[in-house]
Image (tube, rainbow, N blue to C red):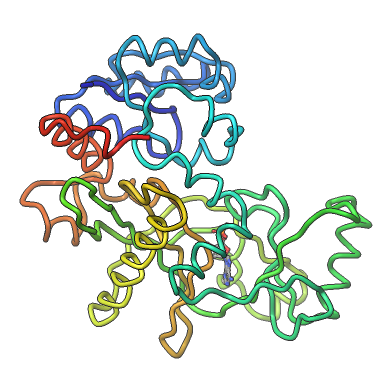
Length: 342
Ligand code: AMP
C-alpha cells in the first residue's frame, strides 16, 4: 500500500503534502466547488469529485480507494459530516488510526467516560439543571466547531436563557443539551502522535483557537459589551500557535500517555496516530480537559514546516501529515501495516 486518500477539507493539504514528501501516492475526495482550489496546490495525484462528503460511504467511491490500494486518512470533517456507525462497520478501505474511537469523540457522554477512565481532570457535567451551582457552558446537540454554545452564570440565568432559546425556536423543548462547568482560564490544544511501531508517544505541537465572537468581545469596552448585550459564542475561525511553559509539559505529556492507556483498555487496539486533548488552564495552573479529538486536529495546519516540539524530535520538518505518512511507510517496510490500520 503506497497510496493514501483523504477528504478535501480540514487538514487535507498537509496530509497530501506529507504523503508526497514520503513518496506515497495521493487521492483527494473533493467537492466540485473546491476542485479548482485544491488543484492549484498540485498535491493530489487523483481527484475524485463528490456532491457530498457522505458519498465516501458509496460503493463506487470505496471501490476507487480499494482499487488503488489506498489507506484512508480520517480528519475532523469525517466526524462532523458522516454517519459514524456506518463508517465504522461498513467502510471497506483500511483506515489509518482506530476507526472505533470516532463515536467516542462524537458522543459527549462516551467522551467524558474515556477521559475519566484515563484519570484526567474534566469539567463537571450537570445532568440536571437544578444541580447547577456555578457558571456553565451549554453545548447544543450537533453543534460543531462551538457554534450555538452559550454560557450561563448560574441556574436562574441558565433557565432564562433556555426559555429564550425555546421561544426563539433555536431549541426544542425536549432536545438533549450538555451542561458543563465553565472553566475560566486559557485554552491549550496539545497535538500528540502515538506510534504503535515505535511504541512511543510524541508531542508534536500546540495551538489555541481563534473563536468568534468570544475572541472579539475583549476588543470593546465593558460598557459597550453590557449595552450591546452580546451572547458569547465559540465558532472556530482559525488557530494560533502556542508554546507551553516548559514546567507544565511533563504533566501534559503524562495526560497524553494516560489517554493512550485508557483507549487500549476501552477501545482496543487503542490509539493509533494523531490525537489532541483540548484543555483549559485556570488561574491556579489546574488543567481541565473538556474534549479530545481521536484524529488529526486542524491546529496542526500551523506546523506544516514543523513545530518547536517536532524540531526537537526530528532533524527535518515534520508536520502531523508527514508523520502519518512516515508511520505508514515504516509499517509497510517492516511488514507491520496491520498495526496502524483498522
Ligand atoms: P468544543 O466544541 O467543546 O471544543 O468547545 C468550543 C470552545 O468552547 C472551546 O475551544 C473553548 O473555548 C470553549 N469551551 C468548551 N468547553 C469549555 C469549558 N468547559 N470551559 C471553558 N471553555 C470551554
